[in-house]
Image (cartoon, rainbow, N blue to C red):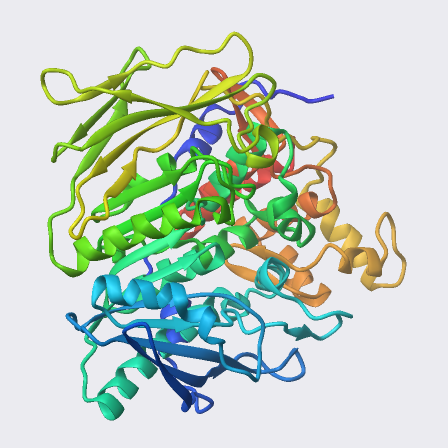
Length: 581
C-alpha cells in the first residue's frame, strides 16, 4: 500500500527537494576531450571514382579511430566509407556532411546508392560528404554471444556507462568522432587532390545519427547548420517519463534501452551521468547555429509533442517540420522530406533569410502562430485517437492526420481552436509553406499539441521498508566476517555498482569505506542501497503537493546537488530522511 508522508512533518527538507538543480557546463566535456584526442588509427585512401548526373563521385575508405580494447570489443578500429559528391557547377565552400548507418563492408557504395545525394549536390551547388557505418557495426562485445548493431549496440554502450562511470563507453562519442574525422578527410582530400576548398559544414543525420549531428555541431566550430532528424528526445529523462505517462508502457521500439536498464535508472545518479554525456540538450550553449529539426507524427520511438519540451531552449534559429502520416523511417514521405530538406539547404547556403516562427497556447487553449514572412498557405493538421494518447503510425494508421486551410487574422497571426474530442485525444499542429530559393517550397510546422492536455498514466514504484545506515553497516560487517545476517556477501555484491555523490562503489571494500564515513556519504550510500535492494524505487511517491506526486529521485537528486555545492549537512539530512520512510 502506497504511503503518503505528511508535508508538515518534513516541510523544510521536502521543499529543498523541489528546488531544481542545473545541468553542468559542457566546457571540457568527456565528449569534447574524446573527439579531440589524436588517434593513430585515423587514415583514409581513395578507392574509386566515377562521373554521373552532373557530379564527380569519390569513394574513400576511412578508419576514424580505435574504440576501446580488443579485450572489450572487436573490431577495435572503426571503418567507414566516405563518399564525396562534387557538383560540376560548384557554388559554395560550405559542404553538407550527411551521417548514415549501414554495416561494415569491404565494397564501396554502388552508384545507385549515391543518387539521392547527387540530387542534393546538383540542387544546392554544394559538395556532399556522406559518411557511412556510423556506428561501425556489427560490434562483438566480450561476454555477449552475438554482435550488436544500431539500438542494441547503443543501448548496451549506455548500460556500460552506467555500470562503470566511464563516459567513453557511450557509442555516441565514437560516432561523433567518426563524423568529425569525415569532415577532416573531406577537407584534406578536396584541397590536396582537387584544389578546392571546404571551410564550413552543415551536418545532417537521422535517428541516432540525428543525435550524432547535434553532438558534432556542439563540438566542432566548422558546423554552421545542423539538421537532426527523427531524434525527438532532448531532455531525455523528462521525455521518457512523458512517454510512459502517455502510453502506460514503453513502446516496443525502445525495447533495447529498456532491457539494458536505461528507463529503470534514468533518474539514478548513473542515469544522470549518462544524460550529461549523450543528451544533446546538455550542450545547448554550443548549439548556436541554425537548425532544421525534422520529425514524424507517427514515430514509434518518440512522441509527436516532444519537441515543445526543448525547442524554446535552443539558442539559435530553430525551424522544425513534423511530417504527418509517417513513422520513424519516414519512408512513406521520403520525397516530401527530401524536397523540404533541399529547400532549407538552399536558403541556408545562399544566405537567404528564412522565416521566423513563434507560437504559443493562450489561456483558453487557442494556438496562436506568428510569422515574420507571409506564407503561401497555412494549414491546420490534426488527428484523433478515441481510446489512447497514442499517435504512432502503427496505432492510428497512415491516414489519421488530415488538414484544412486556415487564414490569418487582420493582424497577420493565425489562431486556431481545436475542441476536445468526445472520447480520447486529438493531436494538432499548424504547417506553413513559403516560397523557396529555386522553386522548391519551404515547409515548416509548429510543435504538436494534444487536447485534452492530460497524461493518463504515471511511473510509480512501491515504497516498502527502507533501512537506515546502521542496518547496512551491520549487514556488511557480518557478511565480510563470514557470518551473514539478512544478506550474504554475494547478495551484497549484487547490489553494486552504485554511484554515490559523484563516486562509484564497485566492490564491498569500497562500500565498507563509504558506510564508515560520517554524514552525507554514509547516509546517501544507505539511500542508494535501499533502491538496489528494492525497498524503494526512484519513482516511489514520498508525498503529494497539490496534484503533483513528489518522487524519491527528486529528493535524492537534491541531496547530491547540495553536496556538490558544499552543503554537506543538508545533503546528509535529506539522505538520512530517505532511509526513515
